[in-house]
Length: 388
Image (cartoon, rainbow, N blue to C red; front, side, top):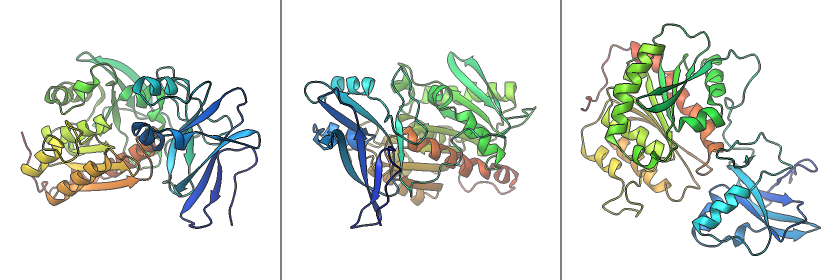
């Protein structure tokens, strides 16, 4: 039997009568003073925008309101917004799209906690269909001991440091999170870290939230040896002195998304004696050439395939909706597996989206750091040699 959301709670979700693995998701807008409404379902809408056609995402007038139905698999998760507009349908150029993103708003009748935004944009609503992966760690909980966050500048870089509750001399496992201004100031990842620690999913950990979202991001997060060496030779020793962060690579994780995911994997490639664990979410492994399978593309994957193994572990995840990244992430998965690396690989039904990444980050940290204490006490050396 089809089941609908409660009255006035949108979007409306019904089981597809032809296939119970899918849902018919109807987005609704009661906006009256507009010529049309564009529904932005993260990455799904982006794909059609890249193809130059937003028609599948224009809502239709029905019963005095705007409606649009998508057929989505029951494990889909995505952030979404609604954009009422006047005049012609928004265009698909980059300038057009930036204007849409600047003015799109959350669904006023949504039921899940919203996904915050930065740079003055409006938050997004979140759609989590019933079989989407659980995200038990992302929301602040009552009764959990709180860590604290302090801000510093290291080698000219802004770094927010989240210290676990009861922080003492250490040594502590350390997690380096790229795009730290998003994770800390916007998404409150300290709550996630505190929840993980309270549940025993990770040991108490020092988290270094490195700001990388400024003008230098394209250079920093593009397999840049200088940037990775700065993290390894300046940031980690500083954190060891100031906060008792470990110097054990087996208890050190570097995590990033998109270009940050590429950089996390590159850090384990270049400096495995400092970064023994890489957590990559939707990594841009096409770099430096977006032409699929061109000889200039997938530089890092080619390096892993051609060179001796490093003593590093990997957690990779990518969204099934990420048409520009899925093939390349699967290729890296296959190469790392063939080369004998310890690897956890997951595909989630979503897109290039913090609504998905915030749950995946928690899962990845639990996977990599949950066994960190056991790994650090093992007397058996890793099967692969360190690389210089």
